[in-house]
Image 1 (cartoon, rainbow, N blue to C red):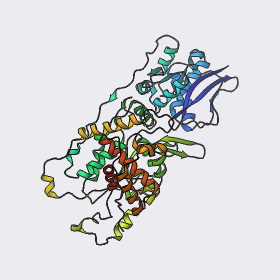
Image 2: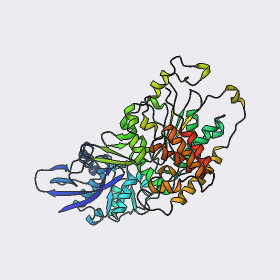
Image 3: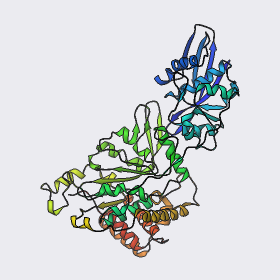
Image 4: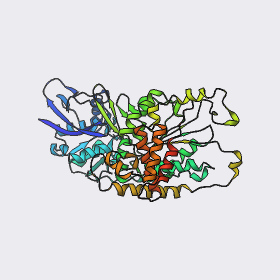
Length: 507
């Protein structure tokens, strides 16, 4: 007789079903696990022996064979401990076989029989719901998995509790979802003295999810402005929060099963490797661009990043998805993020400051900013020069709207975009103006006659690429949404042009 249990193997955010088969056969006593297990899975047999001994369960003097099917799918991680234990308990007739087959299990066993939390409980619950099974997991992972309302979650503290639950001695209550993480206290835009044009660009970028590049001398406030971006972004929609949390679950970033409605804000150091930014490594884990999904990826000191790392961003920016290819697998992660970058105009930072002019100008700026390729630079919707603030302005009172007021305008603008796209269906349905393409782009970004004439003059004089032309129209559409206008006017186009023609490459 072969007893069966079920678990999952992760391919990106997708949880693939794995059938755990347990057979007890005559022969020399032994315990083997087959089906492409990694080292952590192979070591499960030693943890199971100790855990069963702690429960006073004696393993039979037979050959125990565990097969993880499909056998050609690599199995990685310690979460296979619990499903293997469930299949073995069913083979020993300690728990009913049909009960073992009715759940998807994942969890790590300690030597005394306690169940330790594992990563990926949220996507595992999604996979269990698709197979119409309940999810059996450690108690510490139950609050996270219970966010999937379509799946019953059984959260057990120990393996003994699992036995008592399936034998009807002490049924476990269904797990309840964790708390929604309280919103963080964000820094206010009014803390930034001056820089009204930069604040306006930040508002436009937030309203349409446009990519923004800020250049300026050291101390002009580029990083300070970027740090205040989370305070003006709208909260995540429920579907967005679940999708983002699935990625964070695979990275072990969910705290006590809580899900946050705040948009991610990731700011990796410029020494980060390609695997850290894009994703990869031995287990093809998500990188910073996926952890920033539905949020912001802030790259400070942009030219200091390795050029090969920067070039890998070009395709994910366009597609909103990254494919990590390995010899034995191809793993896909979503990465629809807003890219915000900051850079000095040259290595010393004073190329544009007449009071402290660089003695290597203009070659210093061309060499330094030349590390950013033209195709990557073309993908920034807004390019902004952030001038230095005079020390006399620092004594002036705070000016401009607070973050709460700006956030209200951003939410209203995104609501107009959502209403515009509400009747559309399809896989590539846009969410914000930055996603516009094809016929829809032409229909909703058609300027008036004066705007069309201005656009033609600029495109002809400055040689806009097709990508640059379309991105300019998307920014103009966002400016119109912020003003509550259904029509794209010349003023909207002119303001969008003012953010597009600035080039940080000094020649």
